[in-house]
Length: 226
Image 1 (cartoon, rainbow, N blue to C red):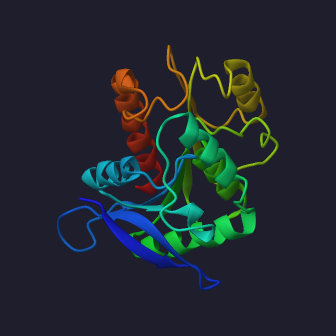
Image 2: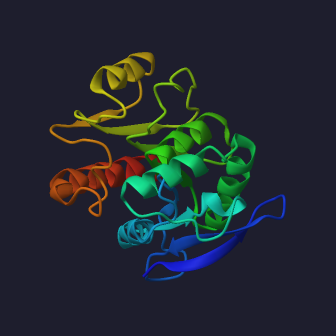
């Protein structure tokens, strides 16, 4: 089961996070994954996602990116929570997000290669990290909310994209344009799925697409880390 940990960034900032590791012999992990939060903060769902990766042989850490503004900033999946999340996401700065992600990478590097992934806003930050943070080996973007605005960034590592074809935040024509600019990046489209289809707490009817997206993610990471 995922457990809460404390990480220390290079500038001395301490942040919370979820961490899960594979069970088995020492050094059994195939690699590591840093998982970046959506606008709702470090929810219990992210601990569950860490557990999912650990069950497939990957150590995983999900950092609390809002900790620089205030501890325990987690919001419910309702209009009020969404609005609070949107407000806090505006406090995130690229320089300090990189420091916090780098702290996760350093913690996972003893297990081998490290990927970055993220959902919604976290997917956007994973895209930014893929373009500009050293030490990463792959990226997996789940419906990154700002990728259209960030489409001219160039990931420097293998990057997999997941989007629903009915995403109201990143409509399919925008997804197509992003891919047209980056045709070498694998893109998976999920019919009938909107935003946040991976999260059963938000979209309980999307379990099949979420499971398929996760299997494709593991296949992608296994191919990159083998």
